[in-house]
Image (cartoon, rainbow, N blue to C red; front, side):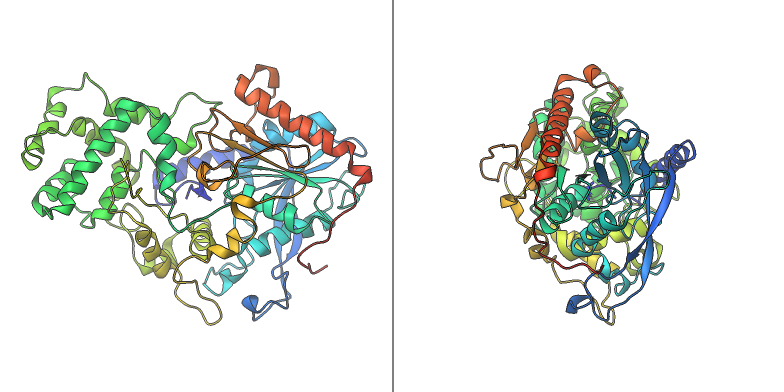
Length: 534
């Protein structure tokens, strides 16, 4: 799933409910891993870092093998350690950040060592094979960030003739999206261990629903495409409000989705090319990236607004006019054609209403059939993050208004039936997340970098709902004017050849870190607000 948190997006991993996309991604990841010269290692990490906290009872003294991979090729004696937080995906998926991305950039600039750590409950770093509600009790931000602090104090790097543990060595974290939030939380919670961090697109402030996801698309997306989708959504919602079931059934059949009897399933599915904060089978606005001008999003919008479409396609625009006082549904034929040609094939079984495809699913699907990474990410959303897919309450909408947070909460209820010791709340416990600071978050030597066109922007440090920001060396911040979702994490091994808006962001990050490192010898570590098992 990309929420992205997660998705956190990404908010954010791709949806596990798009089989073709998932297989292609797995092939790409396998190829990347097989060609890698990096050595994988593991550390025995305590499952429960907080043996006195009631919420983790009954406690365990067991450990699990948490994977990491490092690059010491740039390392020079006395250099820092850069810890890249893997987030809601496997270790292999993040290797590019050692090869050409932000960690490579910072290692090269400072003579540092770079390491990627795989989050607990992702990739191969599972404390338990059985992801029951009880076993998922240890999947919280609190336990996850304790892993990073513990790792910084105990990590070893074969072939490096030096002890690089914190706090005697400066450890600087980097994370984007969910990992950006966790980077922020770690720097703030463990100031006696972690020297600094860069948090990109960091999802600091969460809410049950997150309709703001669509705001940058409304503002920056191709205006003709956006207008067409807005208008079609308005017309569909008008049919729903009028309870015109015959017209709704006809509309669904135009998209080849008459089997989706739940209007919310239908609304979500035709929204897939645009994207949403929970799941989608193809690349969306969130996956736009400065290193690649090709994108399925542009292909989608180009198809929807094709003025040279065949007559049999444009005729569909008039088919539904009888239900809207003779007003045509502009570009409906193009829109439906794209869904049938691109989205429907992501469900090769043709069972569109099933949970593995476009339907809401059932208890069996969510508890037994969904892949482990999706189940882990979903637990975080249901337990403490929220950020559910939802249409905005006012103004135009790219997502039908039948989709509210209650739709996602139904999945939470199905996926996580109460266990013997653990259960999810009836609504996400946002205080667990926002309690770290929300829009008022602050920590020394923590740099915030966001993109103005990021769909997660309004949950981040530079949100339009946040107070005014003023940068300083101790509390630096940077907004990439034309940037997307943690765009600074990508690189091409040649900073001067990068587009100006990315080049300047990377230079800023290098200068920021170098300033911090110059003052490391005079650093007096702060006191942790939490106690770790040593």
